[in-house]
Amino acid sequence: MRRAFLAVLLRCIAVVSLLAATAGCSLLSGSVGILWTNRPEFTTYVELFNASQSRYKLEVVYKANPVASLSNATKVPDLVIGRQADSSPEIGRFVSLDQILNRGEINPSLFYRELLRAGRSEGRQILLPVSFDLPALLSKAASDASPASDTTVTLDQVKQRALLFDKDSSDAFRVLAFSPLWSGDFLYIAAQMMGADFREDSHGDLAWDDQKLTKAVSYLRDWITGVDGGSANDREFSEKYLYDPVDKLLSSGRVAYYYASLSSFYDLPADKRKGIRLQWVAQNGRIPVLDNLLFAGVPRWSRNRAAAFAFLEWFYRPATQRRLLEAARDEHLPGFGIANGLSALPQVNERDFPQFFPFLIARVPPADALAFPRPLPGDWRGIKSDVLVPWLEHEILSPATDQPLQERLKAWRLQRPLM
Image (tube, rainbow, N blue to C red):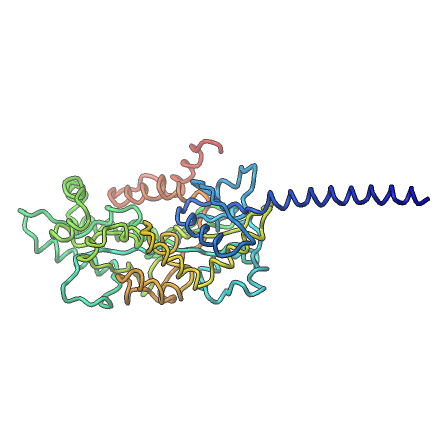
Protein backbone atom coordinates (compact mmCIF):
# COMPACT_ATOMS: atom_id res chain seq x y z
CA MET A 1 0.00 0.00 0.00
CA ARG A 2 2.80 2.34 0.94
CA ARG A 3 4.70 1.50 -2.25
CA ALA A 4 1.65 2.24 -4.36
CA PHE A 5 1.18 5.60 -2.60
CA LEU A 6 4.84 6.51 -3.11
CA ALA A 7 4.62 5.56 -6.78
CA VAL A 8 1.57 7.79 -7.28
CA LEU A 9 3.25 10.60 -5.35
CA LEU A 10 6.38 10.36 -7.48
CA ARG A 11 4.31 10.43 -10.66
CA CYS A 12 2.45 13.51 -9.41
CA ILE A 13 5.72 15.23 -8.58
CA ALA A 14 7.03 14.42 -12.04
CA VAL A 15 3.89 15.79 -13.72
CA VAL A 16 3.96 18.98 -11.60
CA SER A 17 7.66 19.45 -12.36
CA LEU A 18 7.02 19.00 -16.07
CA LEU A 19 4.15 21.50 -16.00
CA ALA A 20 6.24 23.98 -14.07
CA ALA A 21 9.11 23.61 -16.51
CA THR A 22 6.76 24.03 -19.46
CA ALA A 23 5.15 27.09 -17.88
CA GLY A 24 8.56 28.53 -17.13
CA CYS A 25 9.60 28.15 -20.74
CA SER A 26 6.35 29.73 -21.86
CA LEU A 27 6.82 32.69 -19.54
CA LEU A 28 10.41 33.07 -20.65
CA SER A 29 9.53 33.00 -24.34
CA GLY A 30 6.78 35.56 -23.81
CA SER A 31 8.74 37.80 -21.48
CA VAL A 32 9.75 40.16 -24.30
CA GLY A 33 6.86 42.19 -25.69
CA ILE A 34 6.80 43.19 -29.36
CA LEU A 35 6.05 46.73 -30.52
CA TRP A 36 5.18 47.43 -34.14
CA THR A 37 5.71 50.99 -35.35
CA ASN A 38 7.16 53.04 -38.19
CA ARG A 39 8.35 55.83 -35.90
CA PRO A 40 12.13 55.46 -35.35
CA GLU A 41 11.99 57.50 -32.12
CA PHE A 42 10.44 54.53 -30.34
CA THR A 43 13.72 52.65 -30.55
CA THR A 44 15.16 55.18 -28.12
CA TYR A 45 11.97 55.31 -26.05
CA VAL A 46 11.92 51.53 -25.65
CA GLU A 47 15.60 51.44 -24.70
CA LEU A 48 14.90 53.95 -21.92
CA PHE A 49 11.85 51.97 -20.77
CA ASN A 50 13.81 48.71 -20.68
CA ALA A 51 16.57 50.38 -18.67
CA SER A 52 14.09 51.97 -16.24
CA GLN A 53 12.95 48.65 -14.74
CA SER A 54 13.79 44.94 -14.86
CA ARG A 55 10.38 43.29 -14.95
CA TYR A 56 9.33 43.92 -18.56
CA LYS A 57 11.16 44.15 -21.83
CA LEU A 58 9.99 45.42 -25.21
CA GLU A 59 11.47 44.92 -28.64
CA VAL A 60 10.74 47.25 -31.58
CA VAL A 61 9.86 45.79 -34.97
CA TYR A 62 9.60 48.18 -37.92
CA LYS A 63 6.45 48.03 -40.03
CA ALA A 64 5.83 50.53 -42.82
CA ASN A 65 2.12 50.52 -41.97
CA PRO A 66 1.83 48.90 -38.54
CA VAL A 67 -1.95 49.22 -38.19
CA ALA A 68 -2.78 47.81 -41.62
CA SER A 69 -0.26 44.98 -41.09
CA LEU A 70 -2.51 43.52 -38.36
CA SER A 71 -5.04 42.37 -40.96
CA ASN A 72 -2.79 39.59 -42.29
CA ALA A 73 -0.42 39.06 -39.36
CA THR A 74 0.49 35.47 -38.48
CA LYS A 75 2.02 36.58 -35.19
CA VAL A 76 0.27 39.46 -33.43
CA PRO A 77 2.43 42.06 -31.64
CA ASP A 78 1.75 43.23 -28.11
CA LEU A 79 1.64 46.94 -28.89
CA VAL A 80 1.08 48.97 -32.06
CA ILE A 81 1.84 52.64 -32.56
CA GLY A 82 0.72 54.04 -35.88
CA ARG A 83 -1.67 56.20 -37.87
CA GLN A 84 -5.28 55.58 -38.96
CA ALA A 85 -5.83 53.28 -35.98
CA ASP A 86 -9.03 55.15 -35.10
CA SER A 87 -10.79 54.24 -38.35
CA SER A 88 -13.02 51.21 -38.73
CA PRO A 89 -12.46 48.30 -38.89
CA GLU A 90 -8.94 48.98 -37.56
CA ILE A 91 -10.11 50.16 -34.13
CA GLY A 92 -11.90 46.83 -33.71
CA ARG A 93 -8.55 45.02 -33.76
CA PHE A 94 -7.59 46.44 -30.36
CA VAL A 95 -8.59 45.70 -26.78
CA SER A 96 -10.03 48.18 -24.29
CA LEU A 97 -7.53 50.15 -22.21
CA ASP A 98 -10.10 51.04 -19.56
CA GLN A 99 -8.46 48.74 -17.04
CA ILE A 100 -5.20 50.68 -16.97
CA LEU A 101 -7.07 53.98 -16.92
CA ASN A 102 -9.32 52.83 -14.09
CA ARG A 103 -6.45 51.75 -11.87
CA GLY A 104 -5.05 55.25 -12.04
CA GLU A 105 -1.67 54.61 -13.65
CA ILE A 106 -2.69 56.79 -16.60
CA ASN A 107 -4.67 59.92 -15.81
CA PRO A 108 -7.24 60.70 -18.56
CA SER A 109 -7.42 64.33 -17.44
CA LEU A 110 -3.81 64.84 -18.62
CA PHE A 111 -4.83 64.49 -22.29
CA TYR A 112 -6.46 66.88 -24.73
CA ARG A 113 -10.07 65.90 -24.12
CA GLU A 114 -11.14 65.97 -27.77
CA LEU A 115 -8.05 64.05 -28.85
CA LEU A 116 -8.56 61.35 -26.22
CA ARG A 117 -12.18 61.00 -27.34
CA ALA A 118 -10.98 60.11 -30.84
CA GLY A 119 -9.65 56.82 -29.44
CA ARG A 120 -13.00 55.79 -27.95
CA SER A 121 -15.38 53.24 -29.43
CA GLU A 122 -18.68 51.96 -28.04
CA GLY A 123 -18.10 53.75 -24.75
CA ARG A 124 -14.64 52.29 -24.18
CA GLN A 125 -11.15 53.76 -24.48
CA ILE A 126 -9.53 51.59 -27.14
CA LEU A 127 -6.61 53.79 -28.24
CA LEU A 128 -4.44 56.40 -26.60
CA PRO A 129 -3.21 59.37 -28.66
CA VAL A 130 0.56 59.79 -28.88
CA SER A 131 1.22 62.95 -30.89
CA PHE A 132 -0.17 65.32 -33.52
CA ASP A 133 1.00 67.98 -35.96
CA LEU A 134 -0.18 71.47 -36.92
CA PRO A 135 -0.31 73.44 -40.20
CA ALA A 136 1.63 76.67 -40.45
CA LEU A 137 2.50 79.39 -42.90
CA LEU A 138 6.09 80.62 -42.93
CA SER A 139 7.03 84.19 -43.79
CA LYS A 140 10.04 86.46 -43.50
CA ALA A 141 10.49 87.47 -39.87
CA ALA A 142 10.34 91.17 -39.05
CA SER A 143 13.27 92.32 -36.95
CA ASP A 144 11.01 94.00 -34.39
CA ALA A 145 8.39 91.21 -34.10
CA SER A 146 7.93 89.58 -30.70
CA PRO A 147 7.29 85.82 -30.42
CA ALA A 148 3.73 86.38 -29.22
CA SER A 149 2.69 88.74 -32.04
CA ASP A 150 0.28 87.41 -34.67
CA THR A 151 0.69 83.72 -33.88
CA THR A 152 -2.19 82.84 -36.24
CA VAL A 153 -3.16 83.86 -39.75
CA THR A 154 -6.46 83.29 -41.60
CA LEU A 155 -7.07 82.50 -45.25
CA ASP A 156 -8.60 85.93 -45.80
CA GLN A 157 -5.56 87.64 -44.27
CA VAL A 158 -3.18 85.71 -46.51
CA LYS A 159 -5.30 86.46 -49.54
CA GLN A 160 -5.42 90.18 -48.73
CA ARG A 161 -1.69 90.41 -48.13
CA ALA A 162 -1.07 88.50 -51.36
CA LEU A 163 -2.96 91.15 -53.32
CA LEU A 164 -0.79 93.93 -51.88
CA PHE A 165 2.43 91.91 -52.15
CA ASP A 166 1.94 91.09 -55.84
CA LYS A 167 0.73 94.60 -56.68
CA ASP A 168 3.84 96.24 -55.23
CA SER A 169 6.28 94.02 -57.16
CA SER A 170 7.82 94.81 -60.55
CA ASP A 171 7.83 92.54 -63.61
CA ALA A 172 11.64 92.53 -63.56
CA PHE A 173 11.63 90.61 -60.31
CA ARG A 174 8.98 87.90 -60.65
CA VAL A 175 7.20 87.22 -57.38
CA LEU A 176 4.05 85.51 -56.23
CA ALA A 177 2.90 85.92 -52.66
CA PHE A 178 1.32 82.51 -52.18
CA SER A 179 -0.63 79.92 -54.14
CA PRO A 180 -2.91 77.33 -52.55
CA LEU A 181 -1.85 75.00 -55.35
CA TRP A 182 1.71 74.78 -54.03
CA SER A 183 0.66 72.17 -51.49
CA GLY A 184 -1.92 69.41 -51.67
CA ASP A 185 -2.03 69.40 -47.89
CA PHE A 186 -2.93 73.09 -47.89
CA LEU A 187 -5.81 72.47 -50.31
CA TYR A 188 -7.21 69.82 -47.96
CA ILE A 189 -6.72 72.06 -44.90
CA ALA A 190 -8.39 75.03 -46.59
CA ALA A 191 -11.41 72.89 -47.52
CA GLN A 192 -11.62 71.58 -43.96
CA MET A 193 -11.44 75.06 -42.47
CA MET A 194 -14.30 76.16 -44.71
CA GLY A 195 -16.51 73.36 -43.44
CA ALA A 196 -15.98 70.43 -45.86
CA ASP A 197 -15.78 68.19 -42.78
CA PHE A 198 -14.13 65.12 -44.33
CA ARG A 199 -14.81 62.15 -42.05
CA GLU A 200 -15.66 58.47 -41.90
CA ASP A 201 -19.33 57.54 -42.08
CA SER A 202 -21.06 54.65 -40.31
CA HIS A 203 -20.15 52.30 -43.17
CA GLY A 204 -16.45 53.15 -43.11
CA ASP A 205 -16.67 55.30 -46.26
CA LEU A 206 -15.63 58.91 -46.75
CA ALA A 207 -18.30 61.53 -46.08
CA TRP A 208 -18.26 65.33 -46.38
CA ASP A 209 -20.46 68.44 -46.57
CA ASP A 210 -20.91 68.83 -50.32
CA GLN A 211 -22.31 72.37 -50.17
CA LYS A 212 -19.41 73.72 -48.13
CA LEU A 213 -16.89 71.82 -50.24
CA THR A 214 -18.30 73.56 -53.32
CA LYS A 215 -17.98 76.89 -51.54
CA ALA A 216 -14.33 76.13 -50.65
CA VAL A 217 -13.52 75.23 -54.27
CA SER A 218 -15.07 78.50 -55.46
CA TYR A 219 -13.06 80.48 -52.88
CA LEU A 220 -9.79 78.85 -53.93
CA ARG A 221 -10.56 79.21 -57.64
CA ASP A 222 -11.15 82.94 -57.12
CA TRP A 223 -7.78 83.11 -55.34
CA ILE A 224 -5.95 81.67 -58.36
CA THR A 225 -7.72 83.87 -60.91
CA GLY A 226 -8.14 87.07 -58.90
CA VAL A 227 -4.92 87.15 -56.87
CA ASP A 228 -2.36 84.95 -58.62
CA GLY A 229 -3.17 86.11 -62.15
CA GLY A 230 -4.60 82.81 -63.41
CA SER A 231 -3.49 79.21 -63.64
CA ALA A 232 -0.94 79.80 -66.42
CA ASN A 233 0.84 82.47 -64.37
CA ASP A 234 0.72 80.25 -61.29
CA ARG A 235 2.18 77.27 -63.17
CA GLU A 236 4.92 79.33 -64.84
CA PHE A 237 6.04 80.74 -61.50
CA SER A 238 6.10 77.32 -59.85
CA GLU A 239 8.18 75.79 -62.62
CA LYS A 240 10.71 78.62 -62.61
CA TYR A 241 11.21 79.43 -58.97
CA LEU A 242 9.84 76.95 -56.45
CA TYR A 243 12.90 74.70 -56.65
CA ASP A 244 14.76 77.11 -54.32
CA PRO A 245 14.92 76.36 -50.57
CA VAL A 246 12.15 77.91 -48.50
CA ASP A 247 14.48 80.24 -46.58
CA LYS A 248 15.86 81.65 -49.84
CA LEU A 249 12.38 82.12 -51.32
CA LEU A 250 11.28 84.08 -48.26
CA SER A 251 14.44 86.11 -47.62
CA SER A 252 14.73 87.18 -51.27
CA GLY A 253 11.11 88.35 -51.35
CA ARG A 254 10.24 85.85 -54.08
CA VAL A 255 7.24 84.66 -52.06
CA ALA A 256 5.42 86.07 -49.04
CA TYR A 257 4.24 82.78 -47.55
CA TYR A 258 5.22 79.14 -47.68
CA TYR A 259 3.19 76.26 -46.26
CA ALA A 260 4.78 73.80 -43.83
CA SER A 261 3.73 71.54 -41.02
CA LEU A 262 5.31 72.21 -37.63
CA SER A 263 7.35 69.02 -37.85
CA SER A 264 8.66 69.81 -41.34
CA PHE A 265 9.56 73.32 -40.21
CA TYR A 266 11.86 71.75 -37.63
CA ASP A 267 13.53 69.75 -40.40
CA LEU A 268 15.13 73.04 -41.44
CA PRO A 269 18.57 73.74 -39.96
CA ALA A 270 18.45 75.99 -36.88
CA ASP A 271 20.27 78.83 -38.63
CA LYS A 272 17.67 78.80 -41.45
CA ARG A 273 14.76 78.99 -38.99
CA LYS A 274 16.06 82.18 -37.34
CA GLY A 275 14.92 84.46 -40.14
CA ILE A 276 11.49 82.87 -40.50
CA ARG A 277 8.23 83.70 -38.78
CA LEU A 278 5.84 80.81 -38.15
CA GLN A 279 2.09 81.38 -37.88
CA TRP A 280 -0.61 78.78 -37.33
CA VAL A 281 -3.23 78.56 -40.06
CA ALA A 282 -6.56 79.30 -38.36
CA GLN A 283 -10.20 79.94 -39.12
CA ASN A 284 -12.74 81.35 -36.65
CA GLY A 285 -10.13 81.13 -33.90
CA ARG A 286 -9.50 77.39 -34.42
CA ILE A 287 -6.36 75.73 -35.74
CA PRO A 288 -7.08 72.52 -37.71
CA VAL A 289 -4.96 69.67 -36.42
CA LEU A 290 -3.45 67.67 -39.29
CA ASP A 291 -4.85 64.27 -40.26
CA ASN A 292 -1.74 62.28 -39.26
CA LEU A 293 -2.69 61.59 -35.63
CA LEU A 294 -0.52 58.93 -34.00
CA PHE A 295 -2.21 56.38 -31.72
CA ALA A 296 -1.12 53.54 -29.45
CA GLY A 297 -3.16 50.37 -29.07
CA VAL A 298 -2.88 46.82 -27.71
CA PRO A 299 -4.07 44.27 -30.31
CA ARG A 300 -6.48 41.49 -29.57
CA TRP A 301 -4.73 38.12 -29.20
CA SER A 302 -1.51 39.78 -28.05
CA ARG A 303 0.40 37.50 -25.69
CA ASN A 304 2.26 39.93 -23.49
CA ARG A 305 -0.23 42.62 -22.62
CA ALA A 306 1.41 43.16 -19.25
CA ALA A 307 4.57 44.52 -20.94
CA ALA A 308 2.48 46.68 -23.30
CA PHE A 309 0.44 48.11 -20.42
CA ALA A 310 3.60 48.75 -18.40
CA PHE A 311 5.15 50.68 -21.29
CA LEU A 312 2.02 52.81 -21.77
CA GLU A 313 1.83 53.59 -18.05
CA TRP A 314 5.49 54.66 -18.15
CA PHE A 315 5.20 56.60 -21.43
CA TYR A 316 2.24 58.75 -20.38
CA ARG A 317 3.87 60.18 -17.29
CA PRO A 318 4.73 63.86 -17.92
CA ALA A 319 8.12 63.27 -16.26
CA THR A 320 8.84 60.47 -18.74
CA GLN A 321 8.03 62.64 -21.74
CA ARG A 322 10.36 65.32 -20.46
CA ARG A 323 13.04 62.64 -20.15
CA LEU A 324 12.38 61.62 -23.77
CA LEU A 325 12.85 65.22 -24.91
CA GLU A 326 16.09 65.39 -22.96
CA ALA A 327 17.34 62.15 -24.51
CA ALA A 328 16.55 63.37 -28.02
CA ARG A 329 18.44 66.61 -27.34
CA ASP A 330 21.43 64.95 -25.68
CA GLU A 331 21.77 62.31 -28.39
CA HIS A 332 21.16 64.84 -31.21
CA LEU A 333 18.35 62.72 -32.61
CA PRO A 334 16.60 63.98 -35.76
CA GLY A 335 12.92 64.83 -35.68
CA PHE A 336 10.75 67.03 -33.56
CA GLY A 337 9.09 66.71 -30.17
CA ILE A 338 7.42 63.46 -29.15
CA ALA A 339 7.36 61.02 -32.08
CA ASN A 340 7.83 63.95 -34.49
CA GLY A 341 4.90 65.98 -33.20
CA LEU A 342 3.34 67.77 -30.28
CA SER A 343 2.52 65.57 -27.31
CA ALA A 344 -1.00 64.32 -26.57
CA LEU A 345 -0.44 65.84 -23.10
CA PRO A 346 -1.00 69.64 -23.14
CA GLN A 347 1.01 70.04 -19.95
CA VAL A 348 4.11 68.73 -21.72
CA ASN A 349 3.57 71.01 -24.74
CA GLU A 350 3.01 74.13 -22.68
CA ARG A 351 5.63 73.58 -19.98
CA ASP A 352 8.41 71.49 -21.52
CA PHE A 353 8.40 72.00 -25.29
CA PRO A 354 9.40 75.71 -25.23
CA GLN A 355 12.47 74.79 -23.17
CA PHE A 356 13.67 72.36 -25.82
CA PHE A 357 12.30 74.22 -28.84
CA PRO A 358 12.66 77.96 -28.07
CA PHE A 359 10.90 78.84 -31.30
CA LEU A 360 7.69 77.71 -29.57
CA ILE A 361 7.95 80.21 -26.73
CA ALA A 362 4.55 81.94 -26.51
CA ARG A 363 3.42 79.99 -29.59
CA VAL A 364 1.96 76.77 -28.15
CA PRO A 365 -1.79 77.01 -28.86
CA PRO A 366 -4.22 76.54 -25.96
CA ALA A 367 -6.32 73.38 -26.01
CA ASP A 368 -9.54 75.20 -26.89
CA ALA A 369 -7.92 76.67 -30.02
CA LEU A 370 -7.31 73.24 -31.58
CA ALA A 371 -9.80 71.53 -33.89
CA PHE A 372 -8.97 67.82 -33.98
CA PRO A 373 -10.07 65.82 -37.03
CA ARG A 374 -12.76 63.20 -36.80
CA PRO A 375 -11.89 59.57 -37.68
CA LEU A 376 -11.23 59.03 -41.38
CA PRO A 377 -11.55 55.82 -43.45
CA GLY A 378 -8.80 53.22 -43.26
CA ASP A 379 -7.83 53.92 -46.89
CA TRP A 380 -7.71 57.68 -46.29
CA ARG A 381 -4.05 58.02 -47.34
CA GLY A 382 -4.83 56.69 -50.81
CA ILE A 383 -8.08 58.67 -51.05
CA LYS A 384 -6.32 61.90 -50.18
CA SER A 385 -3.33 61.50 -52.52
CA ASP A 386 -5.01 59.73 -55.45
CA VAL A 387 -8.52 61.16 -55.40
CA LEU A 388 -9.19 64.22 -53.22
CA VAL A 389 -6.15 66.40 -53.94
CA PRO A 390 -6.18 65.78 -57.74
CA TRP A 391 -9.93 66.45 -57.75
CA LEU A 392 -9.48 69.73 -55.85
CA GLU A 393 -6.70 70.82 -58.21
CA HIS A 394 -8.85 70.07 -61.25
CA GLU A 395 -11.92 71.82 -59.87
CA ILE A 396 -9.91 74.92 -58.94
CA LEU A 397 -8.26 75.15 -62.35
CA SER A 398 -11.27 74.18 -64.46
CA PRO A 399 -14.51 76.19 -64.53
CA ALA A 400 -16.54 73.13 -65.57
CA THR A 401 -16.95 70.14 -63.28
CA ASP A 402 -15.55 67.09 -64.96
CA GLN A 403 -16.69 64.49 -62.41
CA PRO A 404 -18.26 64.82 -58.96
CA LEU A 405 -16.01 63.78 -56.09
CA GLN A 406 -18.35 60.91 -55.19
CA GLU A 407 -18.05 59.42 -58.69
CA ARG A 408 -14.29 59.92 -58.75
CA LEU A 409 -14.04 58.08 -55.43
CA LYS A 410 -16.19 55.17 -56.64
CA ALA A 411 -14.12 54.84 -59.82
CA TRP A 412 -10.90 54.80 -57.80
CA ARG A 413 -12.16 52.07 -55.50
CA LEU A 414 -13.25 49.91 -58.47
CA GLN A 415 -9.80 50.22 -60.05
CA ARG A 416 -7.88 49.29 -56.93
CA PRO A 417 -6.39 45.76 -56.87
CA LEU A 418 -7.99 43.32 -54.45
CA MET A 419 -6.07 43.16 -51.18
